[in-house]
Amino acid sequence: MEVAPDLLGKVLVHGKTAGRIVEVEAYLGEDDKAAHASRGVTERTRVIFGPAGHAYVYFIYGMYECLNIVAEPEGVPGCVLIRALEPLCGLETMRRRRPKARRIEELASGPGRLTQAMAITRRHYGCDLTRGPITVRELEEEPAFEIAVSSRVGIRECADWPLRFYIAGSRFVSR
Image 1 (tube, rainbow, N blue to C red):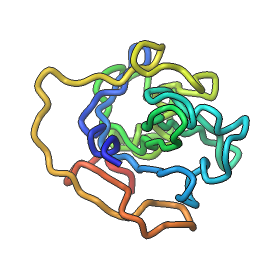
Image 2 (image 1 turned 120 degrees about the vertical axis):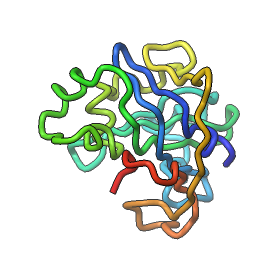
Image 3 (image 1 turned 30 degrees about the vertical axis):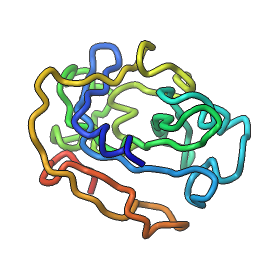
Image 4 (image 1 turned 90 degrees about the vertical axis):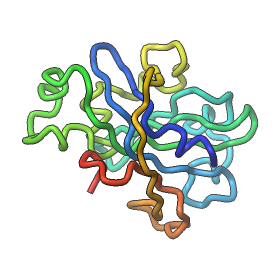
């Protein structure tokens, strides 16, 4: 999946909050047993089978919402989980939303943390990330960085697949 590493360094914007994407994981569709799309089209996964550039937001562990970006053409399931951000704008707002975060590195370092910090919820399911309330933007001058690759985090199926991409050395990557 080419989209996943290409998202690194881009900026996720929601309202007055924004963060640079520093960590992502790819989910490849029906042959990837860790992917929600492996179960086929359901009410929950419908958006993953739709056009690229839309939000797939879901609830896990009874407490966290996660943001994925649909990354394949319509009819071909595949998405990218946004795992961590480097906060750029709206830091005070993020701190209010995540009062237990003691350091800036803890505001959006993990999929549940970043959706809390950015106020992204299931009501954003299906929104167009090119012109909706949440957008992904490119920096005018993107600083150079090295991309590191590892296996995905926190899954049992296909856990050894090297589909986690992150900015090497970033202190904002999830731990």
